[in-house]
Image 1 (cartoon, rainbow, N blue to C red):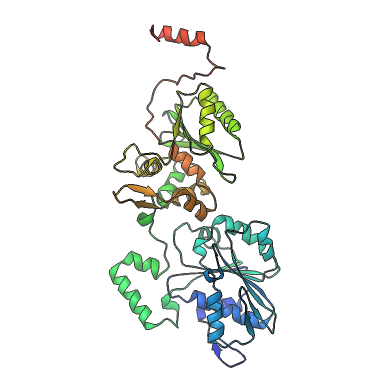
Image 2 (image 1 turned 180 degrees about the vertical axis):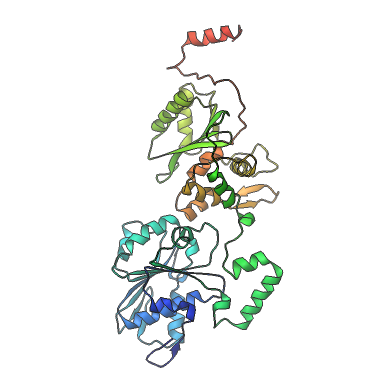
Length: 445
């Protein structure tokens, strides 16, 4: 604890003492409701801002206005402790004695150029860090580069694969402090809060562990695909498959999306090939090469957005027997069970992962994040529906292109058959087609 110049005592609970007493590059605090994280962070920063001149950035993933930030919390704590050396402005807080300054920013709208304004920050406080995307963290971390600078992170865990948990807290280095603090660790927790926690404990153990003990939500409640299923698929050792080759092609819709080809043979997903900033002809040329080299039974491709142009080029080249165009938003084959084709294909991926014998996926952490990063819900008719792709993109910091390419390989059943015929003007002449038909006894056209 410490005293201000008016002799009001600012109390810092013991679990948060390292905020003031230890120097760590990253101080990561997480836990459930009423652990006191926000109050302790605010009080500690106000104390430090009175001891020396600091530039303190208070950051969130989204901040549409100053009301979305911890600005009000800091103002309330300043008023509570009568810290008259702090001056409160419309969009910042300053200390008139030391010159310390608090600024407030949202990260999602910050590109590499705009975020350079944070290079001189001494302490960056990331509040509600469970919402921070991987992209935001990858931009922010190297930007906070001042010697001795620290990043303070406070969060209530939401999902098992929360980006900051995976990238920072799951395997901390010696410069990272990770500490869990719950209401039971908070000496200032009101008795009424403890009563509410106990009621929740009696009503639902799962809710109690998530809300009050800071555990991630069990994925079966909101997630379509569990992390356990994906991890198991990374550990298998399937080397070959005699099943027909199917390719899923997810064509980039926007500038920062990737065009992805997924190659799957039955229970073996062979590989993903990703490309950026390709025009329609370039994508069609790649697909043409893969058809010639690998002879796939089918290529299922997304024909929303730019995909329609690629589809038209491939069809014009004579590949109409191989390619199938799919709209993610079109009606499902099983319309009584699924809201659209997207939900139907993704659920097929889930069933494929859960079935026996076990399947094989390339061990790819980006693929893991994409497959386990989508939430499910049900419409009024009880049909499976998935959250919008844009919501997933906001959370991951990128589009789930690999996972969508894998889902496309389940657009329709593909059965074992003879080697597919490739009707391509540069590969098969009229005489070839005639001779092939004659050998098979086809006398009519």
